[in-house]
Image 1: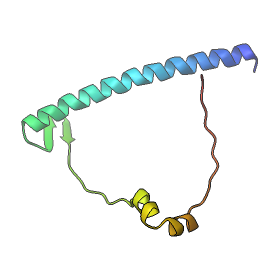
Image 2: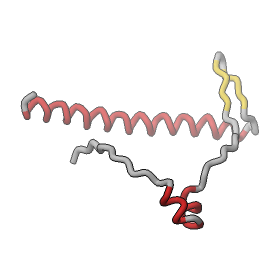
Image 3: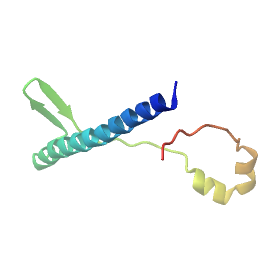
Image 4: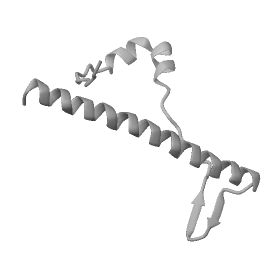
Length: 91
């Protein structure tokens, strides 16, 4: 692939990323409007035509690695494993 081809692909990639950001904002806006209505109706379950919308609360338990490292630094270090990955970026 020539430098010109790569430049063209990167330009297309950047445009698609910009479009994705715009779409993500639109999605969030619409979701927030539906959530506001569900809050106003005090419901976690809503039927709208052929759609059933659920906005439910749930609890999850997660391991607090920051606190564990603070309270048990030596033990955390003994079980910490380094990994290598690659980051793709365009400037």
